[in-house]
Image 1 (cartoon, rainbow, N blue to C red):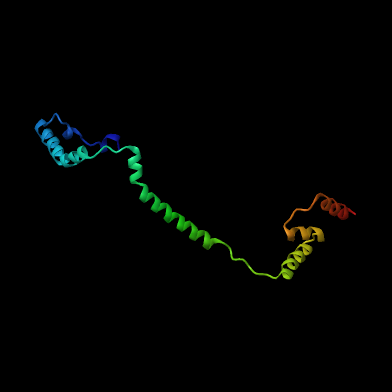
Image 2: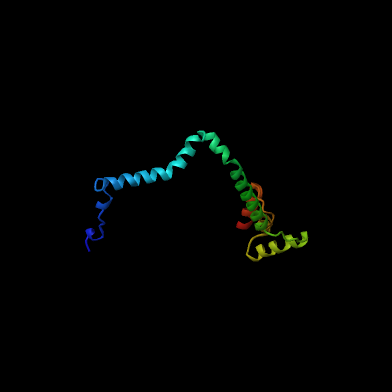
Length: 130
């Protein structure tokens, strides 16, 4: 299959072939477009700010809708907080950390979520080396 097999002959579209047909076609298009061209001629020339101002209401509506959808998603996506007693909250993680082989101070740091001070860290490291 060659490149020229799908070639379409565009010669019938040549305006010089039938000048009268071409002029009738141009006149028909101009006649059909006349009402729109007249409307555009009467319409005031809008500046950029006027065009943007015309889009203000739809833009604000879309923004409000997106904000409401985002708020709904964030509300539904938050994890549920479990209510635990203070006694059971500290006991289980400390026991798990001890079972994993961590020393008592390290388990307490893991449970509290706070970093140890330098002195606490050195004391634990020296105590573990002995």
